[in-house]
Amino acid sequence: MKTTKIIYWVSTSIICLFALSAVQMNSEMAKEGAKHVLIPRYLSLEISIGQLIGLVLLIVPAVPKRFKEWAYVGFGIMYISALVAHIAVGDPFVPFGLMAVLFFGLLLASYISFHKLQAAK
Image 1 (cartoon, rainbow, N blue to C red):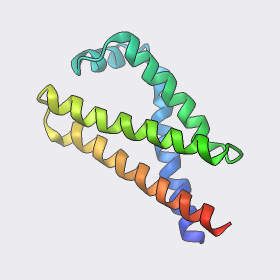
Image 2: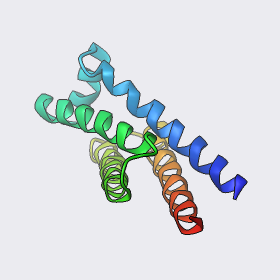
Image 3: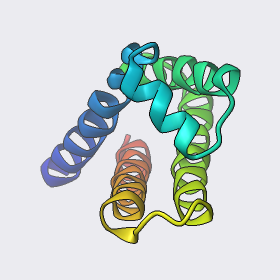
Image 4: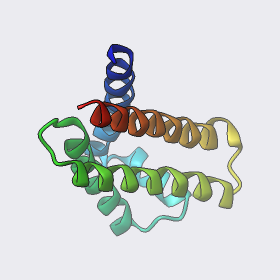
């Protein structure tokens, strides 16, 4: 059980720290990155706001399970979409696609360990 808690908190913390970078949504680098993968400016702002909401839902223990489930779904869709976007514009798999796959793997580790912890209650 202790190992499961460690896996949950480490994987969830890494995902949330990465999502915290969404506060830089108005930086030139973020604008250029979204433009590169053909994401309209309004959608990149929505994605950034969604990441901040998802961060809160995942990291706060008192949030109901159903809301956490939707946060996992949202992050999963975002990482899969990032992979597809980079492939569509012809970016090399390493580092762009690999990062999306890595974060999706961390998301799965967090999700599986979350459910193991819920089942143990």
